[in-house]
Length: 409
Ligand SMILES: Nc1ncnc2c1ncn2[C@@H]1O[C@H](COP(=O)(O)OP(=O)(O)O)[C@@H](O)[C@H]1O
Ligand SMILES: [Mg+2]
Image 1 (spheres, rainbow, N blue to C red):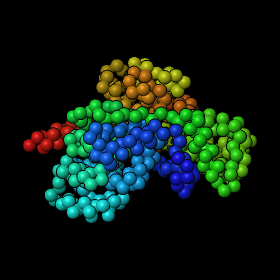
Image 2 (image 1 turned 90 degrees about the vertical axis):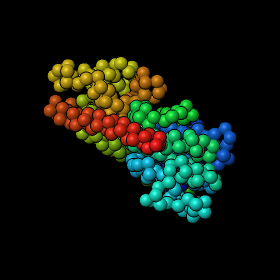
Image 3 (image 1 turned 45 degrees about the vertical axis):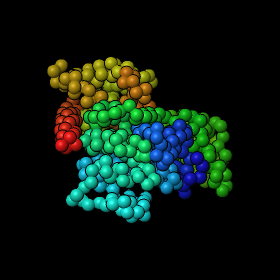
Image 4 (image 1 turned 135 degrees about the vertical axis):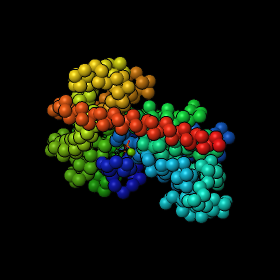
């Protein structure tokens, strides 16, 4: 896809670059879902779940879906994470015209659909009415932050009322592997799950060279320079954007290895800023010790079996806490989930049996240079982290129960 936006390179969360490379398979799934919803396909639409660590390009794909829908004249409802907190807020979100389709919303009122904050319509009713005319795209980004009860109602309503004309796109980090079970979606099978991995080297090359060719003065990048960029990016889209922007800002018309060397410090600055931010989060949650233990065990160079991951994490924290009873298996499980949420680890296969370094693997060499956190620091924050995790599951479970009871009455 060439020349879609003003800015050529967009290092920054959710910003759509001029060339979105290497995601043709996902774009095809998006086009398919939107077409099926627009046609009111008898065969039905299938919700799509995009899973991947932070920075892999999920939000960009959500925006592309919104653009496709707008082109097809289809209304879109967009929600992000915890923005929609309750079932009635969900219904209101479905009814209220979003910024993209205010005009259509006025027409929708002709069907007797209006937002009455005090008298919220049922989610099913709102969904059916909104999708009736031209189908509907629902984008739920940051789905790992969604309230489990809201996600339960949304996924079930789409299955019951929107099977033919609603395309539901969910995007989130791989902790959804665990969180999604709390959604208790009645029929899970139609959902298509797509795990987003690193970009291929060919895609990285495209993302760098195609936009530069479109510049008025044209920019040539030598093969050797491209090989260096590929090596540095490791398929991580954010790094591709950082390199592209550095090249664009340099004003050069020819990019060779010498120029790349001169720009290296600028790249490393941006990369390390990202890594340092992640390191801070790991420390704040008490997960830094576990991350370091995994790196020591070889994470980053080799994939790790799930058993090896659990054993390594358990050993590290038990040693630190000075006892075998301090952490039970459930606590260890929550620590592993935390490490997945922070992008240290992830299960690209979806089989739950093999973990690789969360993108980008170079972060593991960065981690190896960090000082080990002290026992005092780790214990203090880790227990708070664990308390928050377990409290959250209790809240989710009771919310699901109350929403289900509401639905049954
Ligand atoms: N396919 C792609 N090709 C090139 N750059 C991309 C691609 N996907 C994402 N990016 C860039 O990567 C960065 C992260 O993208 P984003 O969609 O915010 O990731 P996520 O939502 O998964 O955290 C942004 O700077 C974006 O411009
Ligand atoms: Mg995002």
